[in-house]
Image (cartoon, rainbow, N blue to C red; front, top):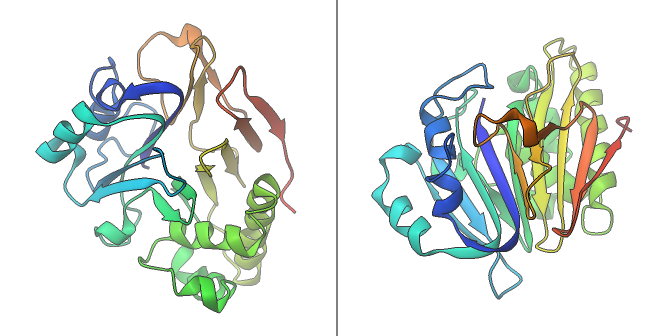
Length: 257
């Protein structure tokens, strides 16, 4: 399983998130503690919002711990809203097109987990992406399919509803293809003004997802960046976490449509 983090608050340098913490994302890429796969070396990516509406993205196929450009970039780059992701492939190739975060227009998206039986259900899911959106498909992952389906389900007007509707759409496609493997995911989405995270599984074993409830700024992570459990709150399964970067987030339950 992949590892990721999102920061939303006062501008900081990226290295404070990627390299400096006790259990930084770079350390998690080598030895994750809350994942079934401990090494996340199948590429990485970072995304950020600056002075313009369209976010910046840097993605590479090297392991995050082995890219000197990332170290240099993180030392200089400052933003109020960062996405960062280290990838452990669930079967698709290691390529830049398959590295997270994904971007389209003003949106950033990244994901951890797997659509159960994806090879069996892939064609059905891809057929649900409208032709105009399908032209934006660059890679082969289930993560990118989910991202593009969000637009088909109205993410521009109702991002929370689009996430719930897309989960339901995937579940129905799995049922129609007689897939019995579980669908497990955490994911996070932003348009630069707010952030929406989701934790979900159709079985009792969803991937981990936490937020720092003691920090002044918003930090959402696949696993804590330190070993002090006292300030990390786990997002419950089948819940959305929504924040505009100011104050405590809203955490709400949902049922897939």
